[in-house]
Amino acid sequence: INAQALLKHILTESDKLVLSYFSLSLAAQGGYAIAANYGSLVARLVLQPIEESLRLFFSGILAPPPPSSSSQSPAAFLQGTNAAELLQVWVWCLPVLSLNGGLEAFVAVTAETGDLARQSFFMFTFSILYLSSALVFYSYFELGDASLIYANIVNLLARISFCLFF
Image 1 (cartoon, rainbow, N blue to C red):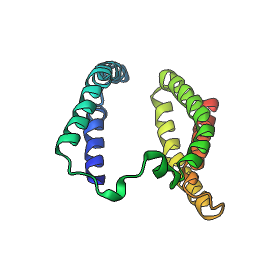
Image 2 (cartoon, rainbow, N blue to C red; image 1 turned 45 degrees about the horizontal axis):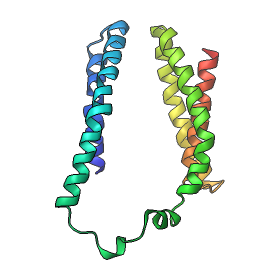
Image 3 (cartoon, rainbow, N blue to C red; image 1 turned 90 degrees about the horizontal axis):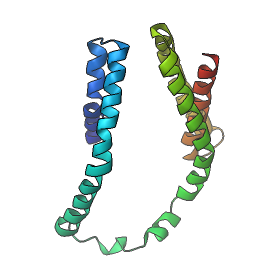
Image 4 (cartoon, one colour; image 1 turned 120 degrees about the horizontal axis):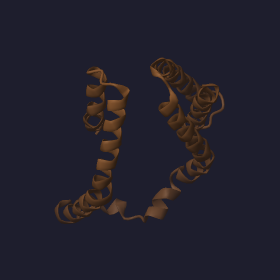
């Protein structure tokens, strides 16, 4: 599944790679992004529900019957996981995520080419910060899987700081 996810990601992002390689102007890249995003709305709003319905239909007809051990309810399954704990941490991440999204949208619209190059450098630095934070939260604070969410908050706060000082 990981190879499939990687391939799907490459296929999904390949248009952006091609645009970057052929060095189209930022205006052309922006125009493409708008067209691609609005065009994909049709796929997400109309075609995705059809795809999901077909997936359910075919899985009901063609899938082998589940083993008897998987007869527990979804609620019983979730009780054996840390999903509730992680969702509680996500509550803290969402406002930071939304603030970051708004500020990065502002930077993307107002930045010049040199600013975007500087932002790319900082994004690489912030990735290292994310990995370091995750390791610290896992190793020293022993926060378990919530470490990734807390590390993401640290990463987002750094990105917000960049945008504020932009």
